Image (cartoon, rainbow, N blue to C red; front, side):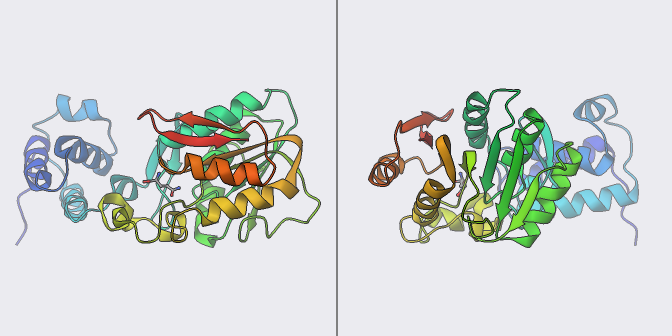
Length: 281
Ligand code: GLN
């Protein structure tokens, strides 16, 4: 039997009721998913609450609300997330872009003069947000992006094409592995996995659905940061910059590690929550 097709207002209200026990933002989540199933902006919902959904739209919307109620992150359902005012394609298999990472991009741009033909390396590029944003904002730079995940590289390439940064060189491998020993960069940036393997947060919220490869790194979460800091010494030009995103409680450990490896000008930078989130050296 066919279900009656609801109006936008009815569909929205029943979705909000269904999501309320599972999310802090049931109305926002429901509006985003309803807009996405209609291919319309939020204003449309307010203007046309009496309009009926087509059976396809209604079915798709119900399916997404069901997945959202089961915890699926909104960005995986809509297939996109905004970062530095650009819409990036995201899929399960890549980390969902976080606003914290805009801090790293801001610090990188401040270190790269607009006209400089700088060589930039992004390690563990994931959806490509760092590499693509830097390449788009600094068109004269030559940007290399590395990831272990073939799936992530496919998403990052699609994002590069979408944002006019198709000249990025994408390489597959573990951290510096795909580079030749003598390749050097003016700036090396990374948002690596930095959560401790047994951290209970990995079993909560959006993190449950994201690739563990992009999240967890060893018993203390510092394995990838340690590997990158060590390798970057051989791949930075004299006076080059290393920029690392890390956990809110890892700044001191990372500073010790960088000092021991001979880095200078180590500085911590705070995210909008006030946590030291990115370290530069
Ligand atoms: N900032 C992310 C989180 O804690 C983790 C991302 C990462 O490990 N690079 O949700």
